[in-house]
Image (cartoon, rainbow, N blue to C red; front, side):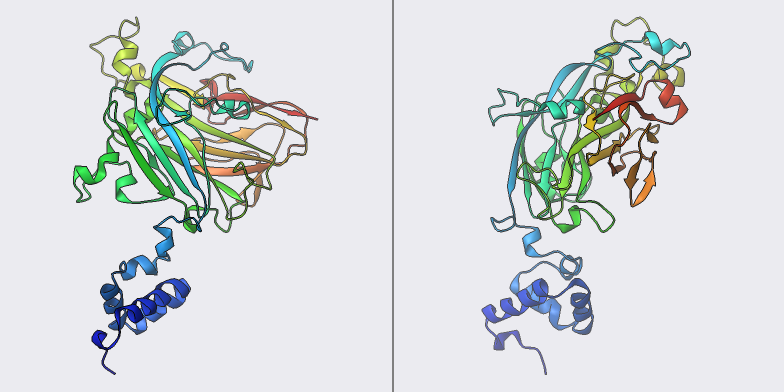
Length: 404
């Protein structure tokens, strides 16, 4: 029988297309596409639905349009602020690890940086206090949360002196909420969020479909990261990065925490390259060790500006890693994006489960994100550090405490 769209009403065609696109499992849908290669494109085109490739990928229209039935809308007011940051606010070598003498031990730990901070409303006048249990986030931006089916809305203001943005990993977004500049065929007006000018505001909308949530080998929640993506290297080394925790559908409490977890920690193993920061010239001006005739590509010079941090703290300064024996503790870990950011986080005195494997050390590549579950059984204060020798020697060390 020859297919004739004019015989059927537009409403009937829409019903057919909706049933085709929304009710069939992805595998069955793809098989149907293959067997009806002439009819399906005409149905979809006639009814104004997205392309076959969109539906075949397993997305529904609900994945693109947030509605009240889909979940909650989480709204955050976040600004990129300029701050003076101290990598060692409580002193040097608080972990008490024997160290060989080096030139970097006398280097400054105070730098001008840019960080994401949360405000109470769109006036951006009052900072939202960070809860004590999240003081360990340090230099990281505010924690964003969502459950599969939710929407995350960011009202962003740029309080720095350079262009910057907010770009999420893992979540679903339209091009106007991508926050990354490259030649994608769209006009600057269509992608104003790619580079927000100093003093300007922009609203990003990110969705949390099933494919942004925990997979078959994950626990009830996973970590994603957001960061500035205009001149990414300079902005991330300036400090513009933060965490996103996504839980499976129906797996979170009212406050967004996963129901099966007692305590959460987010730790970024980050070698901040201050010579690549947006504030390098400001930070080095007037400092004795800076000589204008030396290029920052000189390894000896660059080494003086590498800070081996955990959440922006070095040498045992990371606070707040305290838990109770027998609690279910979930650690969310990620790495910065410099070429040296290859890390092997190691916990003393405890073990974790990651990817259904038992271990006491995991591995991270640049911008890699992961979760590890711990049920601490050994009371005391323990070392938590990167096991790469150079990183350990330069202060990528913290202490965590297990109480009864």
